Amino acid sequence: MTVPNPETPSAAPAPSDFIRDIVAQHVAEGRYSKIVTRFPPEPNGYLHIGHAKSICLNFGIARENNGQCNLRMDDTNPTKEDVEYVESIIQDVKWLVAGWADHCLGFKPKGRVPQLQSVNGASDYFLPAVCPSAQNSDELEPFFASDYFQQIYEYAVALIRKGKAYVCDLSPEDTDKYRGTPDTPGKDSPYRNRSVEENLSLFERMKAGEFPNGARSLRAKINMAAPNIWLRDPVLYRIRHAEHHHTGNAWCIYPMYDFAHCLSDYLEGVTHSICTLEFEVHRPLYDWILEELGLARPLPHQYEFAKLIPTFMIVSKRKLIQLVDDKIVSGWDDPRMPTISGLRRRGVPASALRAFVTGLGVTKFNSVTDIAVLEHAIREELNKSALRRLAVLRPIKAVITNIAPDQAIELDAVNNPEDPNAGSRKLRFTRELFIESDDFMETPPPKYFRLRPGGEVRLKYAFIIKCDEVVKDASGKVVEVRCSADLDSRTGGPTASRKVKGTIHWVSATEAIDAEVRLYDRLFDTAEPDADGDFKKHINPHSLEVVTAKLEPSLANASSDLRYQFERLAYFTLDPDSRPGKPVFNRTITLKDAWAPPKK
Image (cartoon, rainbow, N blue to C red):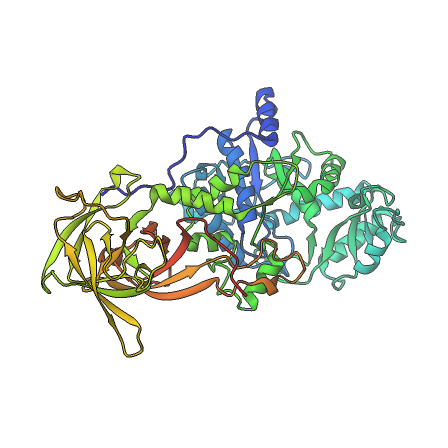
């Protein structure tokens, strides 16, 4: 059997958008020797579906231009960051770009910090793109903003020497008050006109750890009356006496994002720094820092695009942490979470996630995306690649009375009708079967084409059966249906011309395996769960149901690398909680979009 590979790169043409048009123009002009982008998450949580859009945009541009995309940890706030998050980000990015753009992934030798010729020059070496699947992948690591703390500190000193930065003693609260509002100008800090010598001395003492947290900061000297509030003497450095996950206790002052980000881009040779729209107002500061330092050209430039805002999901890291801490979900990789690790555990193929975010396009206008668009992309991919298998989630026994107890009829079943190369497998039809309890009704409504007393249905890949007798327990519950099979109606057989309207699935009761099956649904029961500020109120109480199912025996050898369609039910994947003889399957998505809010 040939198993389809859901990660095979598509032959579809490269997408087009306004950022790609800008890059194409720069390539045509020969402006840069190599196109370099970057994906710089802060390691203070797990990546979510919104990050997937940025990953695919940055890696996509690098891929389409034979360039490089650096994975860089924006680790400038030691009080919120952790090695756990660093490791999860690396795993998520590698998974999402594997087989598609991993040859563009910029890593560096582990433990090596780029060295500069001087604070006014570029790095003395430029790391080539490195595929993380290479044999030496254990010797590689992502870039870290903290790799450049010494260089960034020297750049801050250079700004002080030019009279463009000063040490301020205002508290964080007073700094905000002095900044003014978008409609009213700010006012100068009383410490704004300190001499260069005093500022250099105070900044060195900050670095030496003489002052407590919040006692002093380093601020850029720009314009407290600037219409753009981010240019009103923004803070460049603050004091944080905290151990850093990457640099330990080497530093007690840490650069702010706006200061570290543009300089990290420059030091890595980034050409196109692509951010979401909320950073558009930060761009003048990005440019000011690079220009005031008089850095050698070419300089990086920032471009902004609209972020992904999906329905039925929360993507705020702060609120996702609440879901984890309050044990509303089992962890960051709970399959109901919008995290990349949660989507992966749920069984969403990386190719489907890439197709989804790429299909949305890249614009400058924020809008809400119906999560049904993602679900459609998942179904499209899984329909092509998932292996078909038989499973019964809520079993009821069916006894075929004209089959001997020790008789087994071997049948052929296709693995994927969408892929002729997927081949087929053998099933064994036995006297005792399990069918879905929903596929039998003693008193059915009109136009019910499944099994009923005196009625006939076809069993998938097998025979037409007729319900002859119903067996109930003492409470009146149906526990068994006794049927006869038309053994001349075998599917695909020479005398299988007789037709019936209904076809249902089944498994052999004597050969089926037991499995825990987790039926995941949307975590929230409304499209905009945070619209009223109380997202926990909108948790879907039916977002997870666990059943013990009966599966065809071939699923005893299920692989976590593959996806399965339980025929007539949904798509499923093997969960990491599985153990030998105790498989656990997660429902990735139903076969059709029939979602409706649960009744309250």
